[in-house]
Length: 230
Image (tube, rainbow, N blue to C red; front, side, top):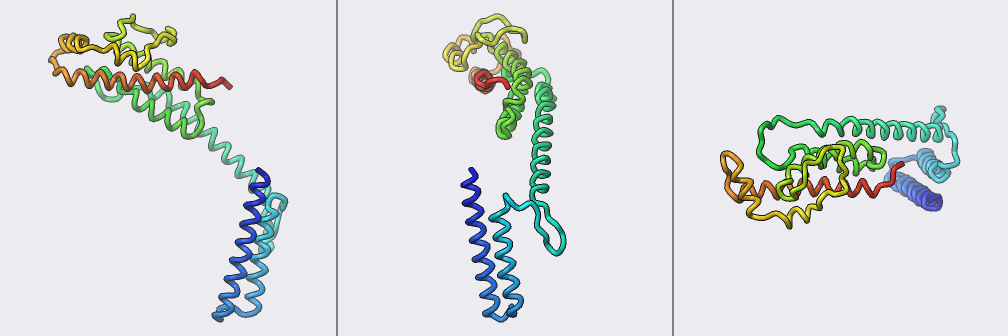
């Protein structure tokens, strides 16, 4: 890594030197610079190039009498970044329980839990910021609620007794198994117990949407199981 940083520093130093020298020569040729300005610009470019090259070693340099402490600025930047990362993680921790709140829809006959989509979007955001391991326990708490509810809503397929939040998740059916065991007779029976009775394809589509929602939760469940606790 240090050799890579050194290579980048060398490249930037050479590029800046050539840019400053070339620019100074061009400005001199078109009469925009005098001899004194030309020398000052070339020297300024060389000095900046040396600062970039030795940036890991230089503690401080001065511009117009003002000291610029590189190491201190770098340390402050690192502290600020770490504070922002911690604040972001804590914000996600607060948002996870909120994902269990219902929206304004009441009395829906859909087998799809309306909270699943929002939870999955939040999980994707947590993944993108690489916070899953720190928030694993918090994610699991919310996930347990949603996957239990969604699994229970499909009980007419798996025929298992209703799960509680204290029950093990080890015997959950896979989404593929739910799809394979779904029959037209189950769909018809579900429709016969619904008032007013929707058409067959509407019920079937809703059930497949519910299985898809369950599949998203099931995938997250498996991903969390593969993560080692801190």
